[in-house]
Length: 126
Image 1: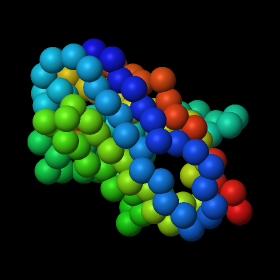
Image 2: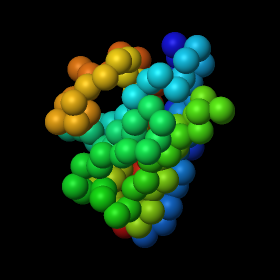
Image 3: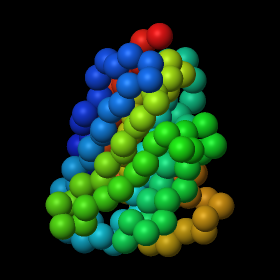
């Protein structure tokens, strides 16, 4: 399984970006998907997770109401729509795929994901 994230770039505060993550390999719909980010000098942090069917999403508090995850299982792609961007959203964003099931309390744990993309950089200027 390979993941390719793209769509990052430079945007002004208050602007929007849409990240995409294309997943190659079989059975995309069987994977839980997640987005994480890592800001300069900081540890990687969880952003949002989306269930296999796309019906459930789980967000870190700092992005609730601004970021939305979705997926197209026919296109093997997961998306992250980011609105009202803030300078503190500046980071490299990674998509990840997890096999099997996990409990809701664990969806934000990096160890719950088995495959990772290479990251796409998002810079939000003030």
